[in-house]
Amino acid sequence: MKKLLALSIILTALFAFSIKENGYKVGDTARDFALKNVDGKMVSLDYYKDAKGFMVIFTCNSCPYSVAYEDRIIALHEKYANKGIPVIAINPNDDERSPEDSFDKMIVRAKEKGFEFPYVYDETQEITKAYGATNTPHVYVLDADKTVKYIGAIDNNTKSADLADKKYVEDAVNAVLKGEEVPEKKTKAIGCTIKWAS
Amino acid sequence: MKKIITVIIFLSGFIFTNQLFSQNQNIKIIDVPQLEELMKPTSSQNITVINFWATWCKPCIKELPYFVEAQAEFPEVDFIYMSLDFEENATRADKFALKKGLNPKGLYLINNLDYNSWIDKVSPEWSGAIPATLLIVDGKKFFYEKEFDEGELTSLIKQKLN
Image (cartoon, rainbow over all chains, first blue to last red; front, side):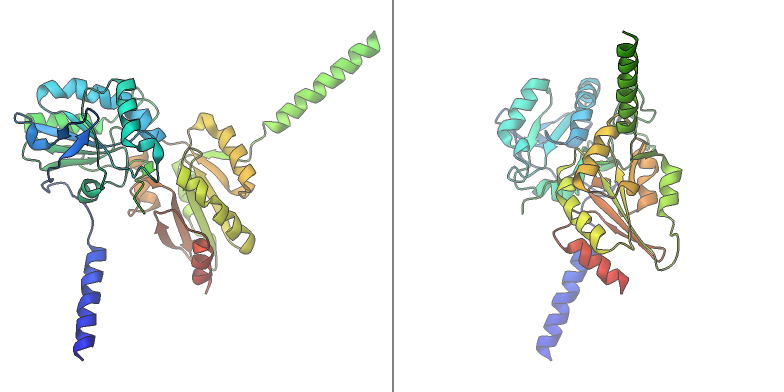
């Protein structure tokens, strides 16, 4: 009987765990991290003392949809870093499953594109799991207290920034800067799966 | 001389029509309303498999042979391959799909980049990552955001057929 009880407790726990939705929802407080940047230094959100927020972007070298958004990510940082909301780009992919996304290749890509923002590697994938990122590119806009204000896509046209008539991340960041409600808090977009370590 | 000209005209005409034929694509470029139409059950007892893929998506390409296997094993099941390539790459997607042995009648490309407006219509469970596969069984939807392993899809269909 005891055995059966123990088993049922374990099963219930397993079940509860498996149906628990992973990752952050809008309104949650995001955790900080210490991840290695392409310049060799560790990057943490707390390091930015005067930040009014962050654009945490899960992206990588290998995904064509991430590549399609690279120039827009650069533009977002250019536009908002000096207003207090920088881009922090995180590569979530396991480099064994996706060799294009190794730390060394990240350094190459950051140099090629002249990234002015950190491009860090989540080698253990712990942060990616904690945030609940599912695809690349996947954006989390945080305010100064690391409260999640927006989760989703950069805009509504992967192919062309000019053709996008909804700029989700810009709208969210503008709202955070003004202390207003974010108009669209969660969006979805087609992207590449995160390459999880097996 | 006249003969030669006739032959040249004849030959060039032949080459021209031949080119026209080779440009004839199987892949159908569609928008959201047609996708919604495809997701509607045609009859009870019917299984439709809709696979969302793209030529640039490595895990998608990896699982395609398992879909081809399932196509052969279940002729009664409708297999639809919904490419998420950009419209200008339709020819490439078409050629690629044929080379891989995908059902030519089931080839579609959805040309709507406002993804947030339609991802939830496929399934609220879908984050937008591909590969993703939707099974429609007797009008019920079963959604899988994953890369299928060998044999996984066939056993899934078997299970749904019972």
